[in-house]
Amino acid sequence: MLEQQLINALSLGSVYALFALGFTLVFGVLGVINLSHGAIFMLGSYAALLLVDKLALPLWLAMLGAMLITGLIGLAVDYLVLKPLRARNAPHLAPMIATIGVAIMLTNITQSLFGAENRRFPQGIIPEDSMTLGNLHVTAVQVGIVVIAFVLMLVLLLTMRRTQLGRALRAIAESPKAAYLLGINVEGLFYLTSFAAAALGGAAGVLVGLSFNAISPFMGQPMLHKGIAVIILGGMGDIRGAMIGGLFLGFAEVMTVAYISSDFRDAVAFGLLFLILLVRPSGMFGKILERKA
Amino acid sequence: MDWWDGFWATYNTVVFSIGVNAMLALSIYVTLSCGLLSLANAAFMGIGAYTASLITMEAGLPFPVALAAGGALPALVALVIGMPTLRLSGVYLAMATLGFGEVVRVVVLNMGITGGPMGLNGIPPLTEWWHIVLLLGVTLAFLARLRRSKVGRAFEAIKEDEVAARLMGVNVAGYKLLAFVIGAAIAGVAGGLNAHYTFTIGANNYAFENAVDILTMAVFGGTGNLIGPTLGAAILTLLPEALRQFQGLRLAANGLILVLVVLYLPKGIWDPRRLRDWRARRADRKVK
Image (cartoon, rainbow over all chains, first blue to last red; front, side, top):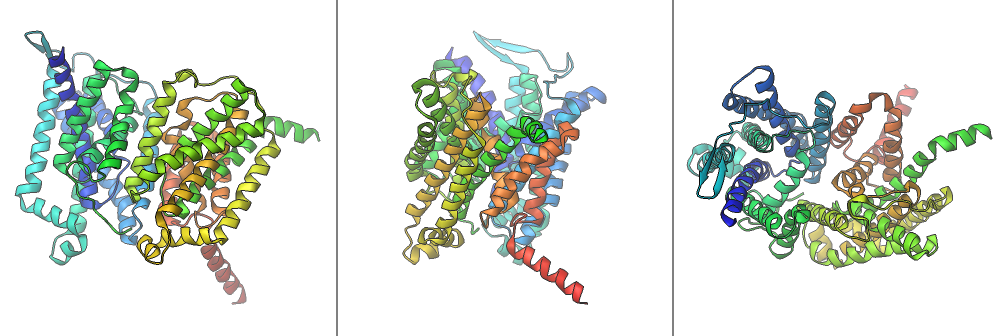
């Protein structure tokens, strides 16, 4: 059933790619490894769940709402934690350690509010239609995941490549100081980046919540680890790299589970990560950004 | 001495934990003092814990031998994986060591001799309080001596500016590897001590969260000197006991502390210069 596995790999890989996209965007523009991205991903699925559950919003609206909410949380994290560190010109390990703290806080506050157990979307919310092509089985959720993930990726890619905004962001990635001197509103674009990255992370959270229909406060951490593997595979800060790295990881995992053993599923990402770092630390597309500490 | 017996019976694991956590915080201090952020120390602790436990349980060798092996094997592993990985800098190294830690966890989960997902149970309780005091003392004395030696100065130079250190003829790769190996050995011994009073160990005791805990203690205390990590470990081990009434939000408090310390006390709570300034200001005020 290779074809079926490929479809599973495509939908898993799209989610990884979408998650990694925000992660890599923050690294590319802000030069920060934001380890709270996993917690924000987790909050995305809780936000969607609450919007569906309490406000009875339709799924598509709940998804947009969840993106807005996680985006604002990302903005708050940037304002409260990353901005003071930027202002102090702190060494690059400082934001990494601080965002670990943020992730611990968000995870545990969620746990004490909603409990540690898995939560589910109410019945009937998740479209149960599925298509059967020959002996292939494709669910509506899988199609939705792939379509939404690819649309969001394409929008981001085109924004970065074709618009004035994208040009400004790339200028900042090259040198925030030079960008500032050219009259680019660097601080504003930092906020925008943090917002967009967190919104993308939240979207990934909603999609994962839908596809497994199990939401827990601890779902962020494993995803974060996968995201790290993906952006290392693809090259840190590179958008194409995040997309291809995500699909590649999804493929590698599904194939490992299908043809080797599900025991090693979690080792795949890190085996790959380790290998890539040893052989080609800049990833498939990246160039090593030597940022001075 | 009744109160002592009662106190000891209730709190001996807390006291043991402070000692072991202090050693772990010192193990990450060594690598940080050389400018390396390694998230592999929890994995090294795990390797040490499994090695030491298997030696006392399966081979029946004496405890000191088990502890020595518990330090030696992680050091050896660090030597092997350090050679290629330490070429990486900054966040790349942190990621690589994180990846290594996860690989160790999955391997341990899938091995027969480690008990797989069940972990090891019935480890003989051989750790006495004086073992911990002694080994923590030895670690502190060793690191204090190291700080003032040529090696310690080389670490300092690499941490401040790697390129300049290399231009001055410092063997950067060699010293980084040395710091990594020393850190792994200390973490391994701490793991061996820990396993022999907790009775049971499992692969998930040595995952990312634990690496973060270790890092938090060191960063919270301050990594500029040896007192910082020790003090940080003591306070953060006691804190959950003190915050017992907040239950679910206890860990959230840990996270908040980590954020606040990075933001407002970048050198940790034990920062001699800040303390000196503070005392000087107070003295000034008294004179007026």
